[in-house]
Image 1: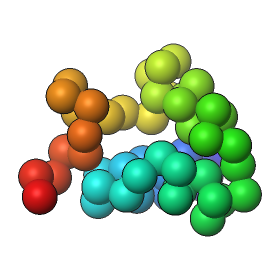
Image 2: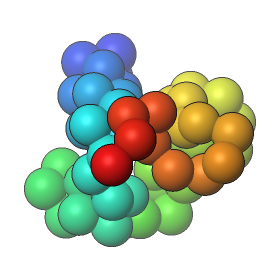
Image 3: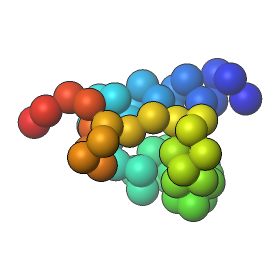
Length: 53
């Protein structure tokens, strides 16, 4: 579980969308959003990734 969360966090930090991460990891988008809501996965305050585009 920790490895999965770590992989997801790295992808979020790179700016990848929740939807595309969910597809790659064979998870529902809601599962990732649940992790974000409950503090298991961090997103920046403005709702986008920590790395500006």
